[in-house]
Amino acid sequence: MVTRIISNFYYHIRAIFTGLKYLLSPGIRITLKYPDELLILSENYRGMLKLNSELCISCGLCSQICPAGAISLKLFEHEQTKQVKKYPEVDYKRCIFCGFCVDICPSKALELTRIHDAAFYVKDELYYEVNRLITGPKIDLPCKRSKYVISEVDEVKGIVYRNT
Image (cartoon, rainbow, N blue to C red; front, side, top):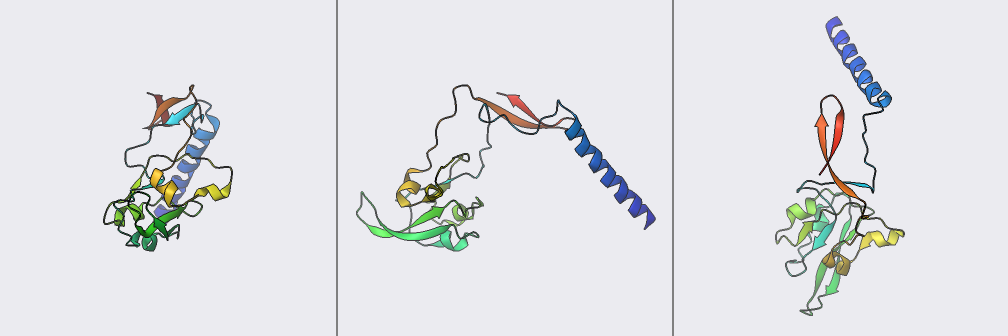
């Protein structure tokens, strides 16, 4: 019991010193200088959704599996086929970007994009009705002075950002 208390004490002291190292060292940086520096995301990053309406079979599994209740089905008339059926709509105010909707979709009509840093001035713009979900999320291109960086973990310095 005493050895466990001592080992736990040592663990907590070590964690405190690790935190102090990041706090007091000016050369160690945790955050990016956004928008001057943009992080290159991995291929399996979960961003905003895009809908392929031709593949959608209106099964509703995406709305049933959504843990946040961000997806609802609405009747919509497809412009090319003039077919009326239910398509998903997404409320990004509620979405937690878990990707369950993409995983469960039997026809692979939903796909995740790598767009994650979209900004909106009005909360109502966070609701993506069918037309906006079909075209996919649009964001402004980054500044011309922006450079892309890759994050790496260094055992001594912590997270290090390298220029590409």
